[in-house]
Amino acid sequence: MYYLDDPLATRPLRLGEFSPWVNLELADKLFFGEEIPKNPVLMTATMGGQVTDFLWTTFMPLLCVSNRVVTLLQEHHVTGWATYSVEVHDRKKNFLPGYHGFAVTGAMCNRDRSRCRVITKPAPTPTGRPYEMYKGLYFDETQWDGSDIFLVYYYCIITTEKVQRIFKKHKITNARMLPLADVEYPIEVDKVEPY
Image (cartoon, rainbow, N blue to C red; front, side, top):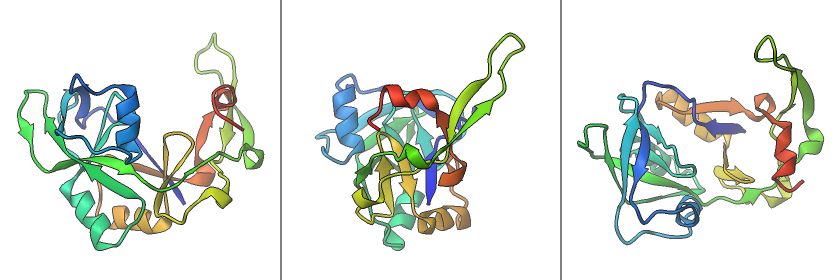
């Protein structure tokens, strides 16, 4: 399985202005496919300039995907996702057609950190200190509903190999897909997430 993530590239558009009625509670409901907005969610780019298949935002968990992504997911009968209506604009406020808000409707599974390795990373600066990270993103498989796209608590989007192959074959842009064994994340996650 694979972790679908923001590659944090600087060239692609990054959406940073949103409809004033969108708050974190609604953003969560949109991302989890629990609510369909009556009106399109307005999203405007504040960074970058390149149009890509995935448009990430400064307001996680909002995320947009192109018509191409939606068509591929439909054609290959990929499960665990939905869309909602958005109106996307570039940095010059020009309308960009062909985008959809992306929701993950597959199960949300808890992390299983008992299977992770703890690794020590070198100090990022000469005066800094080494720090610890978990290596490997594992989850409680008994909570997985079998969807091709699902979540590991809270916003980690996980896909099956089927989705990874589709995206790779069709060269989907601005999406990083890491094998779960290669994912690294801060050990401080223990302070904010259930074990």
